[in-house]
Amino acid sequence: MKPKSDSSDRNQAGDEQPFAPPDMPELRSPSKDPSVFEEPWMQPRDSLRPDPMDQPGVSSPSDQDLAEMSVWDEPGRSKDLSGDTPENAVTWIRWYQEQVRRTTLEFTWAVTAAVAVLSGLAAVLGALFMTPNVFFAAVFAAPVTEEILKIALAIWVVEKRPWWFSSSSQILICGLAAGLAFAILENLLYLTVYISDPSANIILWRWTICVGLHTGCSFIAALGVARVWNTFRAEQRRPQLSDGAFCFVLAMVLHGCYNLFATLLQFSGAFY
Image (tube, rainbow, N blue to C red):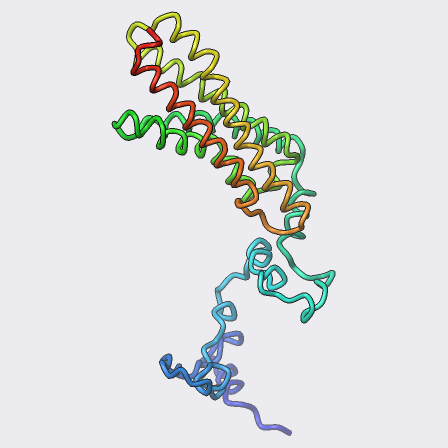
């Protein structure tokens, strides 16, 4: 008969709980020696630092954490060396597809409505904190800030919760609605606060040309977000904003060119 271990004797004596972790060995301080013999796997077993996830009271990673940390999604993985992704492997795209199956169509349209309403308001609030330099703000700062803020919520959804959209048309609707909401709020602000007695030409200009500009530029930027959404689904990978960069920049440039033209007209007195 094998003699009982010391830990068994302590458990029977009541000195230690049955499932208490064993006494951990004293850990070695990290070495700054670059030698390969100082790597953790070259050290004696007693000196290895335990995995924090193995400690009592530490919760296991969520499915989302496992998907985002999946080794099969590493950009440096060589398919020639590692082979095809196993059918039971945890990957980000498979986790995304599972979330799509759990998300209802009604929920995606509710998100679309919320993003459309809040995006225009966010852009107006951001424009209120522009630099006091009128020319710089109008030509450079405003186009960048406004076009980013009008699609910021849609970008966040595509990057962090892409299953909240069920089609790219919902993203385009968000862009159009954000541009229209921004144009309306900005017109009300200009015609009632910034301009004390607007002329008929200014009122007509703002409710036609300005509305078309903001709606059109937001739609172009939204095309970029939709491209990001469509591309990651087609290529079975995580979303990358670089896929829509051209549309983002184009919307800002067109907006800046319009603002330059409108600023020159204002200085020349053509509106009055």
